[in-house]
Each structure stands twice: as structure tokens, then as C-alpha cells.
Image (cartoon, rainbow over the protein chains, first blue to last red):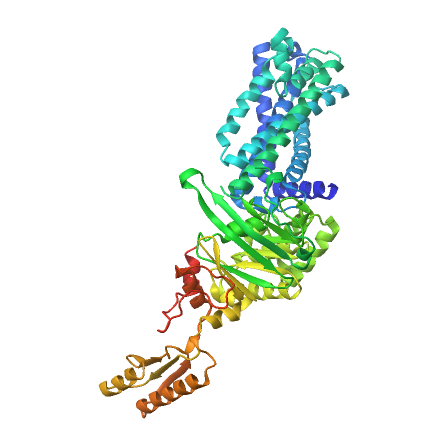
Length: 257
Length: 369
């Protein structure tokens, strides 16, 4: 498995590096968008000083948004692209089994993406001249967030396996994600709160907001809910992906596009 | 249907180990309701190590579906597959014994170099990374691609890409190699190189299941031929035996210079020969059904001598026995509506008494794909 992980990391890295303009373009766009957000928020809220420590949460919110968006699209896009270019069936010929390969692939891609985001973050801090301080406990809700997002990514990947063309659907996912990230569901009460706990990603997002924007300490009870939420959506992703693999093999449409 | 509900009828046990590939009664339906059709109907194929089986059939006959069922990429609705005794649909580890180059697919990452592709696919086939790299370098040397190892695959010629795809399929030293149209779209030189490689791979003990529309390639490379028509195997025999079956060695084609006069034509036709300008075809009508009959052979030889004496003194341009090739055998098998008797000594396809029609060139039929 370690060899497969390094192999995937190397493959993704080499494929990306072969067109360096793509990497540079990605970094420039991510940074420019953030810069735009930063200045428009500053314009609305007043001077940079008044902006204060909300900048930290803005940075974290934006980075989280790009990361989750990337995770969500990654598996489906990769499946769609490989089906188009004709390497998908070779991947399915692996004795590791398709699920393990795509899981390792997702982890490898995420690792590279994190590196890219760190570069962007560095640029942002340099441009804004601000300093960020993150509590290390932030990593815990980030982990549950990645788990839930990966589960959703496998769901989207399952759709790509069975239905092939899912670009429109992936676009729709972004709006749903925007709603999930922007709605302060942690302030909801009663049944609405319970529903929010059951929706994907939401408990992790609520915790992240609490830690960053409101300076709260980590509520372990809520983190347990976020962990359960992440694990459940990840498990659903695995189950549905395996179902989609069988379905595509039954239909004989694995390599078709 | 889940993998648990995959067909398990009559599972083989120890006997399978001798085969590189064993598949029995594979069936596949596509579509639903009234539109449902059976793409593969009870196909059974077996291969011993080092054997090359040419799996031939017209477009839509079920070749690719069968190959993908063998590779574990399509679930069969009935029947089973064993690769070196393991089921690729239930035991993913069985895929360690399979390499495949699939038609219509790139099979490679075009942004990566040949060596990077070999290393990646080696790891994907469960080789340790160092071994994958080492094997990759060996294969590049064997396939004479060392000087191209650092070029991205997309910059290489189609022939080289195909050689790399075959090398990638061999990186984990599989026991079974599935080649779907390996020479499709290659120029003559690249086609010859790929053919040589395939022969070498088979000589090293790897069983090869090969589909191609280039029947000369199949004839040159294969030890055995299986012909599929409308999802059913209509013939399966050693290649030369199948060709022999469709050859009528007692028939002759004689070409003369000059014009045959009417009296000569009449005399020749009286002996049972057909005259077409300067070409005379002679096929004794009953010979093929009674081979070995010394009396008949002697009478036919007498007829041939008589034909020569009628033609005398016209100059002879060409005299030869009519001999079929795989194209002739294939065309007659797939064009016949006769019932199927795949392993019988004689197929139920009626043998012709007249000379064969000119078969389309394999290259022409290939370009139709």
C-alpha cells in the first residue's frame, strides 16, 4: 500500500509538473480570488484594523472551501477523464481492487493539494501582511471534514461510473456545498439542529467556525458527532462506490464514455 | 447482482491449475425487455501456457465482451472464468496473472514517459517500486525503446505507443496476456515488430488470447483459432488444421498464355473443368468427401494429365493447387447460416466445389473498424 501511495503521489506530481503553467495558473487564481474576497470584505467592513481577528476565520473559511471543493470533484473528475482517455480499465485491472486504488489516489491528491494550499496561504499572508494563529485542535474537525467530504466524493464518483457525464451535477454540488459552508447551523436549535448533525460536513464546519471565528474551545461531544458524521458519510461513499463498480461491470460500461 | 451472486456453476478444481486460462459457458445479456439480446452465448475458451489463441469474429460478434469478462471488467450473466485456477471476479489477486492491451483505449498515461508508465503500472499490479522500475528498464531494452524512455508518451509514434502498452501489460510477468487488436492502425514495420514481440512473449511461456481483424496476423501468430459468430463459437481448431479443412488440395488452377479455342473449351468442360478466359479450374467433385481413396486419386490425376494434353502446346503461365488461407476459412465460417459444430472434425459448413472468391485484403477490413 505504501508503494501504491508513493506511486500515485509520483504519478500525480509528474503529470501536473509536465504542464507547469497549470500549477502556476492554479496558484495565481486561488490567490487572486482570495485577495478579491479580502478587499471586498474590507471595503464593506471598514478599515483593516476593524477587520481584526476575523481575518483568521476568513482565511480558514476560504482554504476549507477550496479544499472541500477539490476533494468533492477529484474522484468523479478523475474517473470521467480516465474513462475518456482510456486508462480507466487498466486501473480496474489492478489486483488491489478499484476502491483501494481510488482511495489511495484521493489521499495522494489531497496531500499534493494541501501543499498547493500552503503555498497559497503563504502568499496570502505575505500580501495581507497578517499573521495567523491556528489552534492545533483545528486539525481534528478538519479531519472529520475531510472524511465526510471524501465520502461525498465517492458518491459523486459512483455517479460518474454509472452515468458517465456528471459535470452538471458536480456544478450543482458546489451550490449545495456553499449552503453547507455558509449557513451557521450550529446556532440552530431543536429538530433543525438534529437534522444539521445528520447532514454531511455540517458538524465539522460548525466546529471549525466555533474554533476560529468565535474563539471557542473544542466541544468534544460535538466533535464525537462530527466524527460519527464523517465516518458514516465515508462508509456510505464506500458502499455506494462498490455498488456502482458492480453496476458498471454488469452493464459493461466501465470503459465507455 | 452482487459478486456473491455471480454464477458458480460447476466450478473447476485442480484441473484448472494446468491451464493459463479456462472459461466455461460464458453468457452475457445486454438491454432490457424487448430490447434485450444475448451478446455472448455459452463461450468456452481454454489456453495452455505458451499457447496463442486467435479469437476471431466480425464486428459485434462478442469478442471484446468475452475478453472483458475474462479480464474481470464485465460480469458474466452465466459461466465462469479461471486464470491459473483463480476467479478474477471474486479474487482480485487473480489479476496478478493477467496483462491486457484493450482496443480503443490508450492504455497509457500520455503525459508520463514510457519508464514512468511502466513503473506506475508495475506498482498498480502489486510489484514493489524498485522491482517495477528494474523490470521497466529491462522491458524498454527488450522492446528497443531505451532511447525513448524520457519522452512523454504522447510525443511518440503510434507503433511505439503500442509497444509500450504491450510492455506495460507484461510488467508483472503475467501468465495470460489479452491482446485486443494489437496491430490496429500500425504501419507495416511497426506491425511486424509487434508480431515478433508477441511471438517472443508466447515463447517465454505466456498464454496469449489475441483478437484481430488482420487475419494474416492471426494465421502467422496463432497456434489455435476460435471463430465467434453472433455470440457463439462456430469453430475452434489448431490454425493449420482449420485452414486444411477449408483447402481442397485435389483442386487445381491452371493458367495459360494465348486464347483457348472452342473445341479445347468444350473438351475441358467435358472433363469437369471450368474455363475463365486463360484460367482453368479443375476440382474433382467427390474428392473431398473420400480422401484416401487411391482409385479416385488415380482417376483425378488421369484427368489432370488429360487437361494438360488438351492444352498442349499452349504455354503454361501458372499451375498450382487451390489452398485456402485463414481469410477464406473465416469468411466461410462467419457467412454461413449453418448450425454450429465448433469442435467436430468437419464443420457443417458446406465446402465449395468452385474456386474461392477473392477475399478482401485484411488491411481493408481492418480499416473498417
